[in-house]
Amino acid sequence: MTDHPIFKDYFSIQAEDYSVYRPEYPTELFEWLASLCPEHKLAWDCGTGNGQAAVAMTNQFSYVIGTDASESQIYRAMVYPRVEFEVALAENSPHQDASVDLVTVGQALHWFDFDAFFSEVKRVAKPDGVLAVWCYELHQISPEVDAVVMDYYHNIIGGFWPEERKHIENRYQDIAFPFESIPAPNCTMQKQWTLKHLIGYLGTWSATQNYIEKHRKDPRAEILTALTEAWGDDETKTVTWPVTIKTFRVNPTGKAS
Image (cartoon, rainbow, N blue to C red; front, top):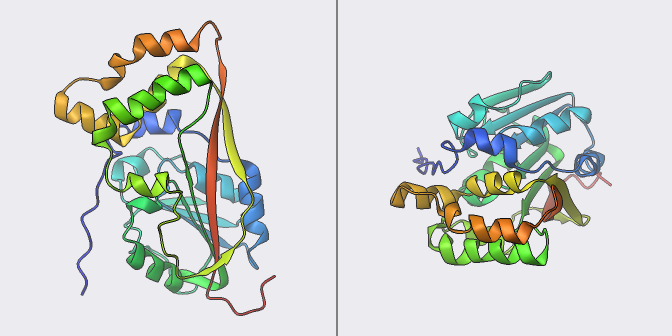
């Protein structure tokens, strides 16, 4: 019997804010992923967080199961028809062998035990099943706002990022996937945000929470004046996130298009 790694729960404390301030993925992403799957009976969203991706996939799949190792995240996940949420480690899912059409991991793969998770994907995926993982980098708003956020990211909370963050900074290029790659389209996310939204979003960062835990004060206070000045008089601004998508054919038969 293999010992499971200790789950590093960086997100339970800010789970409620996470559900409010994290950006939504574009509908076109899920439509494209569904087009790759021979069948559309069951999708598994692993590391589901607040369940936004799981709920979105009900437009293409008959049933969706979202799992997350954080009980707090699952507790706050959306209640929605044909979606089931369970607390589970990525490498120990509730699925039967060869039962899943699509496996998705949004902004969470870097926390997993890669080899164990990939073995689980091979076990649960149907023949010609699909695995899709994606991550998004630092957002872009305006040169003035971005400069303040970059200073916060690197110089104020830079030493508090978990080691796993480097995988996002490398756009998952440093992860060896044992599957047949499928070329993925370019993708971005956009939101209209107030300054309050931006400040709330910075609070969902694991490095912000780690800083607060150590110093017992909120590091966002150090940039509040500069951020307010950089934001200016606009009530809202367009926020853009570049998304890196990596998609794979699992258990290929050679019949899928």
